[in-house]
Length: 233
Image (cartoon, rainbow, N blue to C red; front, top):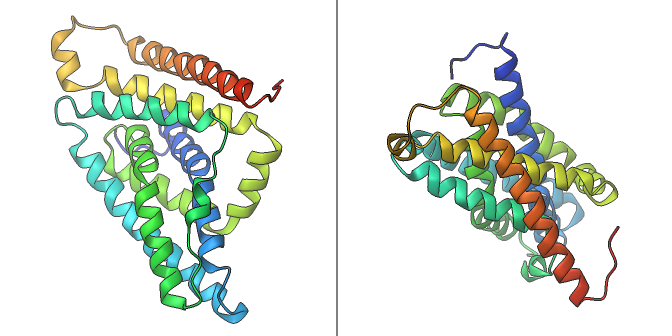
């Protein structure tokens, strides 16, 4: 994709990158808060700043690497399948995995915790953003540049919105499914096995991916909540 900021396609892709970052970064805000909660009040802001700076830098490097290698045969197919699983998992009821984050009473211990935890949790974000960038490194960097400050400064507000409006999570999961569908159909190895496709095929594959994620995710969600004797609307 060419970097044409006057193109509607460009801004749609930027919007996808921002939304994916927002939806998939909620857990990271929790990690930051938990890692720094035992610091002295005057150290918390410093710990959060350097922890976020290290985590963001690492994520940018990983995402750029993913975007560069994504054009190799079959990698988009694998990445798309992973993204479908990630999107379905996003819709499922939360477990308590975040509770094993150990708070630190030392500044650099908290920074290390934030960076390591973000690295472990970044696979979903990296694959999603790399897929939404459609192979454009410039678009990828532009989207990250726009979304990172939004996440850093608004993480608690974003978490509140996601708790108050569950439809944001549903929309994010559907978007991930859409990106996954487009990604898998654009894989070089897959295209080599198929006859020439019409121009609307990618959007159709994305729509199928979104519907698949929402349908399967809702089914799993209802089964899990039924076992927990919880009624959903």
